[in-house]
Length: 228
Image (spheres, rainbow, N blue to C red):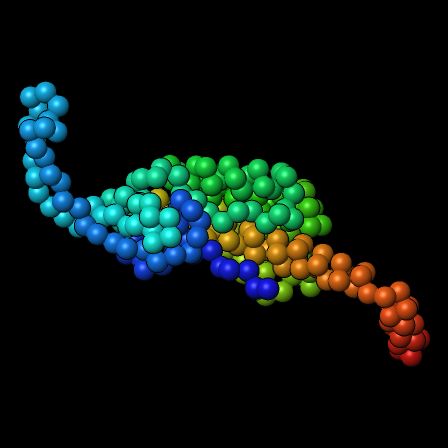
């Protein structure tokens, strides 16, 4: 079964994964009108009633009925910005970095990007990379040895470049474009799925075959080797 793609919350979008319930659901949108009355007035503080303009907006999840408050096209309530869960097959160390990045994403996209860059560096070493080499060098070695294909290489390089702008600010403004950091979480999971989860599932499927079938496959492959 194909995994449902996680769609992050985005201003004015009709559907996305709710930041509260996590369900991919239709979102209803409305602008805000402030109303003040004498009954609501704390002490002698004056009140006002007026439309707050396009800067303020609210979206309501059709599944859980909870509302998100937006200001200048960014979420201000709830405070945290949820992302898809880390791949179950990632190591505890990588998961810890992933989750820490998720916690700081709303307050500092650059800090989150730097943490995800470190998560990538750790993951590459766990996949057979050299701990003494840079991310760039390890990706290059994986390409040379055909350990990763073109799509995986693009995913890893995208993570590296965006993450570098978190640790060393460059041409990408992560404060102005936090959605680039949100995509980094998906890229980490994409690499894990392709390089860890799918191979593991294939091994489990093959190992579950009848013993006679596996013996026949082994004989066939041995014969092919002799012919070559």
